[in-house]
Image (cartoon, rainbow, N blue to C red; front, side, top):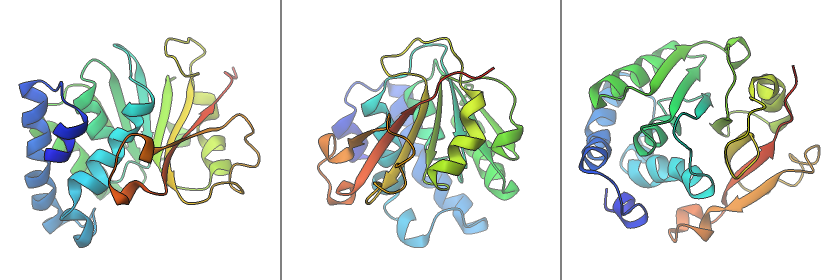
Length: 209
């Protein structure tokens, strides 16, 4: 929890309380449904919460914005971002029902009114969004195919509407078809060794009717 305070020092009491509750909630649910590895659950705030919030260092979401989290798993990056941006709307999607069960339960326990959770495939989700966020659920070619028609043409952020994707390692080959992609190294924002190869990839997507 100190990690979150270190990098986000203007949180409200409600936000601090919500972030503090995450550890207990995920440990409780993880004992029933394994959504986070045992190794990672002990470093929840570093490997999951702060990692998710790396997106917020690249783009601050404005009030009323709509964000789709594809392949959210147990709720990352969507739930930490929803706590940080209570005036933005988050739609968390995963094809595995038990993971969405955890997302729904955690969101309800935290009192998050800005989170919608859906068990299903990204391609089936209706609506348009300012940004599509995710943590390395598949290769970028497939991910863009799933999501490119879900980006609204109405622009309200500094970055162009499109994808904000958390991924590590050498992405040269994976991004060869996306010359407009921009990589933001998380070491620019966080000093922990865990982030050494971690990045946020921004891919602007032109609106297609």
